[in-house]
Amino acid sequence: MSVLNNAADVLRCFGNDCPDLTVSDVVRLLGMPKANASRLLKAMREANMLETIGDSHRHRPGRLMLDLAAAYRRSSLLIGRASEVVAEASNTFGHTGYISVRDGKEVTAVADFQGTNALRVVSNIGRRLPAHLSATGRSLLARLGEEAVHALYAGHSALHDLSEQLSKVRHQGFAYSSQEATPGVDAIAISVADPRTDEAVSLCIVYPHALVDTKGRNEMIAALAKGAARIAEDLGDSAFIAPRI
Amino acid sequence: MSVLNNAADVLRCFGNDCPDLTVSDVVRLLGMPKANASRLLKAMREANMLETIGDSHRHRPGRLMLDLAAAYRRSSLLIGRASEVVAEASNTFGHTGYISVRDGKEVTAVADFQGTNALRVVSNIGRRLPAHLSATGRSLLARLGEEAVHALYAGHSALHDLSEQLSKVRHQGFAYSSQEATPGVDAIAISVADPRTDEAVSLCIVYPHALVDTKGRNEMIAALAKGAARIAEDLGDSAFIAPRI
DNA sequence: ACTTGAGTTCCATTTAATGGAACGACTCGG
DNA sequence: CCGAGTCGTTCCATTAAATGGAACTCAAGT
Image (cartoon, rainbow over all chains, first blue to last red; front, side, top):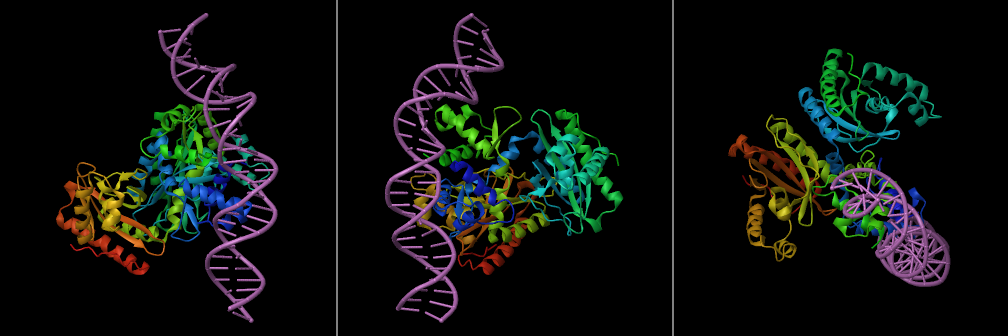
């Protein structure tokens, strides 16, 4: 209805696989009269929410947007603490690490730490993934109660499988995926929350399947678990489950 | 005037040192009637541009904003190419690296690569710095003509010094700062542009002053210069100046 | 119980958003 | 050189939303 919602809809278009937008893209994607789309993009441009690429008619997010993700990170003690842990683990083992948050049925990375190994998984920060299809997503879904997950995934065909996976995660204290989203890539994830702000984040390490055996995997789980446990204790996360390896 | 501009003003408040905002913060910072501020924050919340922290009245940027910086990076071939170069240099030397863009008289980092050395400079992505007070900023300002810089800094007391520094940067092909913004921290920066999109980025390495001698510094400049020269050639940046060491 | 500060809601007024249609700019193929 | 197609902008009357003063709620402090 209001411009603000339309502007938000435009920004949402950048979410997945869309590096830039034209007026007619917006008309197509949002089903809006093109007069509105034209004026909306112009207004967003003038507000620095968008900028044109060169002198073409293609738009990308504006400079105003560049610092907001960092402001989000700064607003959260939990993210800062989690980042320290994952940064250290990433450096120790040479693999890429993330901090992710859940937004409904999706997860998105808020911070990433590139691995240093020659063969490492490339960072995919800023891409939204279905929560039920990734270790980091399941580590966050596992924090919800059984009922909350049922409510969230009501009518979803994957619900039964997901429930089983989540009880495994709850029992183990960590989530694990092997070549699930990407062939050759494994991931481990542990979640921790700040009860004062109701935030939950996932600490995640992704690594090439071929490079890490069970022993190496367990060392990484132990490293993340140690850091996560300290955070859980400091912040009072009583729902934290110490991983059993 | 319109909500969009007010919303943009609210988002701008997160820029510097402000991790969260309340209704009265907005009233104070933007001089807006509190009825408006209250409704504006509510509307931004409902559009996912903001979210409340826990159940308090404090707001931070919303989930919608988290992926936009990544979309910006993805929209630019130049940023992608520059990131590869800086990521490699960061890994080789163990120091922290950035990619930055200029926005008027400010620079902001769009990508960062944490160093791996025990003593390394901590990433400050998402903070805007005055362009004339940092190596990365001066490497970008040097690309502007002498006149453009005079126009941009008209009436600014630092203009004279800046002009001198910039001609040095233009002659050398790189910018260097020693313990300028932060005691004990040095930085080197080289800029490269994409003439097709009118973008310019700075490739920057920051390192502890005590850890690097002139020889080490020159090795890093050479590494950045080599990568930047390849980008300049591939994209047709005729204004690129190969650093002289 | 009184004050102070923060946040929300109400309502008449003002201002901006809407969308159909006409217009201008560009590209492609003949 | 022309006409069809695509894309983006502008115009204008209509409709809908933003505005800001004031009244109201709620909580904390004294």
